[in-house]
Amino acid sequence: MSAVVSEHIEAVRLLVDAGAAIETETSWGDSALTIAARNGLEEITNFLADKGAILPQGPAGRRASRAAPRRGYHQLVRRLTADYNRLAQQPLQRQTRSLLRNCQTLQRTMKAIVK
Image 1 (tube, rainbow, N blue to C red):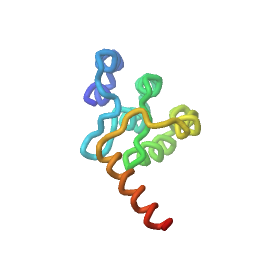
Image 2: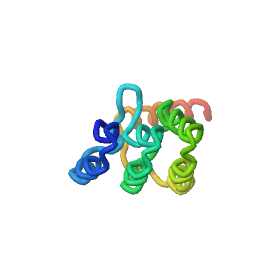
Image 3: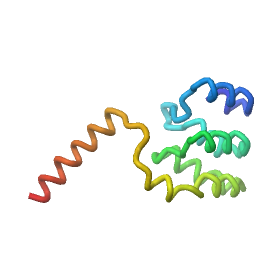
């Protein structure tokens, strides 16, 4: 994240190519992509998006998607939302334990409702 904040594209490239997790979030829910998009860092935003980063669905993703157009970064918003429908139809590539637990809870709830 500090490479993004410092606007250093080469450092971002080196870190990502070395295996840095691009979906890592801060305690506020910001990812490298949200920070780059919110600050209009087009080259970094495009690089991260090309590597598969997507905006988080929580408040940080919403903040970035609202702040970018207000600041005039319309190209970034179009870039980040262009593939949304395609991405939304794909199965999850990574699943966390909490997500899986939530899915199991949802399945139990749905079964109880259907009965």
